[in-house]
Image (cartoon, rainbow, N blue to C red; front, side, top):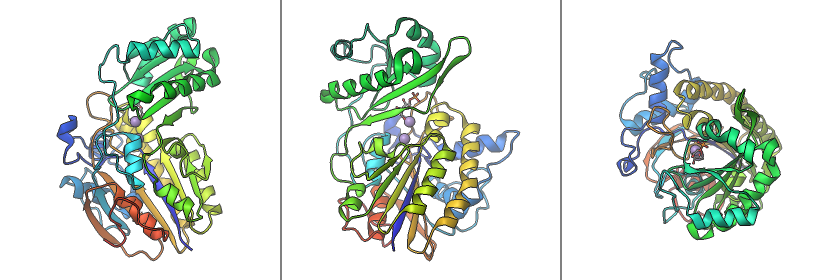
Length: 401
Ligand SMILES: O=P(O)(O)O[C@H]1O[C@H](CO)[C@@H](O)[C@H]1O
Ligand SMILES: [Mn+2]
Ligand SMILES: [Mn+2]
């Protein structure tokens, strides 16, 4: 009986990719800079016993050529460990996930590059008309928490949603859950998704928030991503085609536009995501893939440039891993990876072009170094092999090669 669990630690880069300079990211190192910030702070060095057992700091040292602070004496890993560079252009969530699932994007997504007046006026005019809005606020590059602090009060007063973007291929819409309405926000996002057809934008993201100007505005767990569908069948489709079940936990279904997803299990917050993953695995049958995205690493800590918060979240994740490792049965494969970097010590608030870890573990799988690999697709190819599927279009199987 073969099953697979794939955990995406969203944004956990382990050092700049070979082509990072093309993205302004030479020297970015999400994991290394978090470790350094923790070691220099009163709290002391990062403690990640499980991830060290699986080979995370060792993969970081392989990617960068130097040990992260506090991990100078990391022992040999007990799993399969290596690092991967992204072949697709960009440093985006969809392209990172799709490539990991065997589909390498052969063109960059479209971008709204201008920091101010970012969206074409004809696009905004069409959105206002179709959605029956009195206008929009924002129309710029922004950090999502800063822009609701700045424009949330005006939004509540006059009812115009806040639209913004970033260095990623995104059109984000922030609106107050009560004052504007959650369903109305989702409807605005669905209309935007349609209107963006000529612009090749990876995702529209609904960013609901609550609160008031006096106590502050806070984003809720009701975020929803409206991604373009992957351009070709992915690992998820291959699992389904072979009769296996794909259980998508958290954001995974949205990122794949529900393609190849048998069951979608929403959850918000890393503990809930972990609990849901464990419950899904307990029920998963032969040939199943359980895939979970841990988004708070990126959304709550990476983009917010909170290195110590990111470190604490890694430690909390690490503390949950024994439950998952104990739940693995003979024939199970656990794979951990990331989709891009988001160095919390880097200027701005955007993602960073980095290598990511490829860690795998399973009962009876002999520990092995996997080296520096040149595509995220190696992860998906390895899972496909493990589940006995036909080879995917891209990727070198990390189990055999
Ligand atoms: O600043 P917030 O709203 O978290 O947005 C960030 O989250 C998006 C998805 O990762 C990125 O494109 C980035 O702009
Ligand atoms: Mn991501
Ligand atoms: Mn992000």
